[in-house]
Length: 399
Image (tube, rainbow, N blue to C red):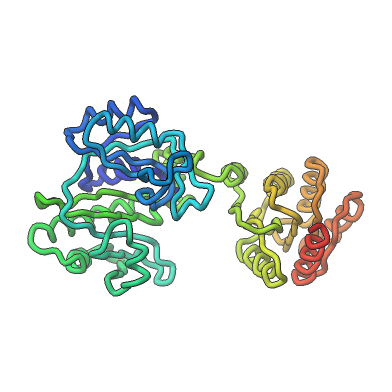
């Protein structure tokens, strides 16, 4: 689960992390009022979307030479002008794709007199099964270029879960940032507090870009991108309430309401599978046969008929879907229940695309009988390889 920058900063501030003063705004007038609460004379007007690269982004509705989604303002009139430009318009960044994201919220912060920018992030490193801390002296908008062209300027440290982040780890981080004296001490304190927040709130990622040294000798978090482990949000009701569903794909939001693991992809073959590993294998074999999956969808091990029906309907809402492959290995999930759900959903949405179904496992014969007697044009498959070949052939017939 992702949250906005202003929400991330408010959360980090609760753990003692130093951030500039700032206020969220949902309208132009709120943006101006927020600026009035700040000392000035420099303000920063920041678009709030769940994507990076806002500073270099472009608004679809504005001229090509217009400024991006993060702008400096030196007066209340400039704050008003920037807020007017941003709110309600679509910001396209390197991370949003061509569709972009509509800006519905702003964050007005106090300006900082920056001496140096750094990069710092914490994330779950699945290779080491530890929290990794990544630091670089080259923070700012071009961190992706730094990672590509000069990877030696990026240092990665892994944290032993038995000890947590130690003083020695913090000193390694400040040394990698080439800081000394009081600046090093401030950076080490910031690192410790960020790690505390990371563990306490079940974060998956906490990216600070930039972490800055100001000209008056302060270390500040100027930007923060935070993502949480969605499976842990039952422990953090207050954080779960920060979710902004307008920033998410509507189909993925609907899927979450049914406890379905759904991710939209760019292909044309819809997939409904039980089990994440089997779902990945299904997508791979579709690609092996020359087409591309339209989604990842795991209905889980114990789905009800209603859950399967919902999954089927979500797949069919994607206009790019030209065919559907259902691949079920019944263990806890019984094949007859899956079959009932498929038939119910297909009839309810008036199925108009080819459907290939491979069933195996518990109650498989009952499931196959339900499908064969449904009166629907369902193509049965004997195994996964057979299913992939058949759905690809069906889709290509339609094309």
